[in-house]
Length: 614
Image (cartoon, rainbow, N blue to C red; front, side):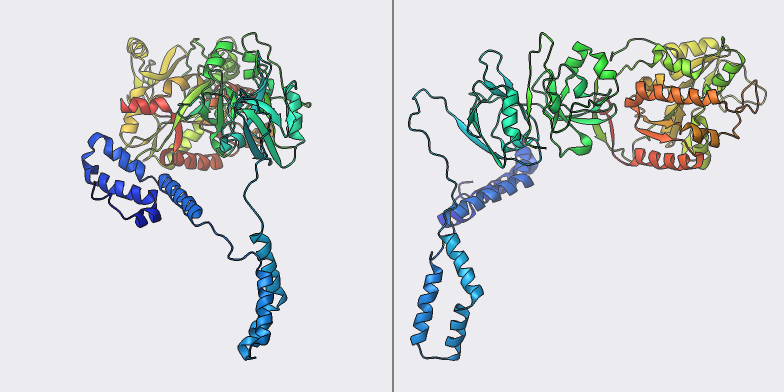
């Protein structure tokens, strides 16, 4: 190592840190394959492209400082006139006449004039002079200059509860203030564009910023200790909707991030135990926003603003700095967003699972006896539709390998929307790839049926034993007989290298979402009522009691209402939504979606991967 480091001063000065790094890499390369004391990790770090680029920038800056460009002369125009006078006294030749013509040219004179203007000007930044009467005990101040653009500064301010001073409440990740690295939460503002903020309200400081043009100059007293955040960024799936403008407890509604259930969010800052900073995975280039933490949502259980659909406020505009005071006794926070542009979540209730594949018959038998049968709408509106998900679910990007089993495809939708027919169409199109599991039943085998073909015929005792051992994905009772889809039947199809397709009641979603099956859930949504009238005007519904029963207007209304309830309560679990406005086109769309689900990266719950690694 000592011999390698012996380099000439000229070489070291020429190459700088890049040369030192290369020599270190050569030495580490001798021990790389031994992986002694983590040398492999250090070797990979030093070879990182970002570090190499940073060192190159460092060397270029030092090279510029050593060899700073400076003009040879500052008055080239006057020197040109002297040269022309000398040429008059010289013997006249072709070269002499050409040189005099060139020096007298208007364009050349303009070029030299521009050269003299630049050469005589000092481009070094001039800082304002410090006042002479600074007391010895004066706190250290920092002057921060930020150039105003169309994006928000990405910071909030508030009044300190005790001292009454205006301080930086938080710096939003990805904003101008965060990228500059000059503002920190806790910094005390002294002046904004030369205006002292002592005695001003946060709203008045905001107005100064709104009406500022160009550069904004902050004079502030920095905090003594900078808190170093050790939070690791993670991605989560939102399990409910959130609208900051309807949340009375958010410190600053303008800094909030609205999102809908099912959207993927990147959590970038968890230093505040109540309010996290996040941005949407669909647009990671944007500035982060405030969202309630898991702890806050579970503690407060603010069901009204969390569950209600968004209703825009006419008095709240994007260009206004509308702020809402906090009324809760344990959160006396009132932050203001520094604008740079002018311009019940865990339910323990259980429910009976209705056997998938029999929803259509259930719905039609309701016509014969309202008292004995359960409609899709009544099942949707019951307590079974309470979501059992936490406010956020951590997710990771998953790419299925060719050696892995296919992901289970789950189709769900209201009765009458065509879930069963879509499933049958997919299997008929390619039976060598797609297959549905054979269900279990306690009813007697009919003469034309075979055990293991249409059903697995088992006794009631055997069926109940399988229920107790959690062997079914879903099960239910129909006409006094039990029906269910077993986990083993699904795994058998997946182990055979095929894609298993099942249709499921929404209540069975949480039970099927396991690391072994890794289900991809597709919601089949009904089209408009006019479209359903046209596409189903010749459709017949077949049951054990009725044949050729046509859809009625009440059926269309029931389908719409049930679909809406499914989306409201379980939409966060849907990986894709397909509108069944035309059977063939919906089948083609499903084929494409299923292919992408198997071959392209998808967001899945993080615990699926953790379970695989254990």
